[in-house]
Image (cartoon, rainbow, N blue to C red):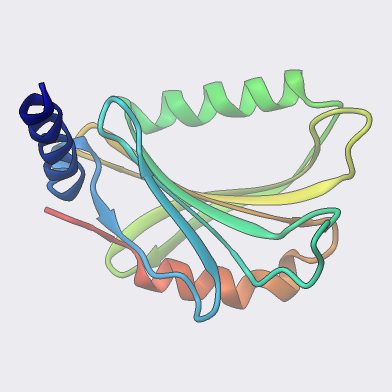
Length: 167
């Protein structure tokens, strides 16, 4: 039994280390000093969460960046469905803009909005970058307190410049 348990752990660790690009593997680097959490879900899709150092044990809100991949055949359908869901589920939602940017040879679509998920929560800004590649959608979700996105943009750019889809 112990041998079987060791084999299963070894197998799972091997699966984590060898996540293939068909399942959405990517590389990304957090700014120096940031806290990073890297995880892979049961379907093998990866999510990397990162945030700057905390200066309080009980922060009200922490600016953060989440880079993730999911298997979905159409970037257009995913974006429109996600946006429609955000608008209908949020207590407050306002679009600030959208567009495209070319970074590292990737054409990234982005949208920027102001959101309050629940009436009891504060208002936040989100800027989301999307890339569709081989049936995977990569998204970089950048969330700040309202009014801090412009100040945080240089950190977002640093993360975006480090992003690579692994082939």
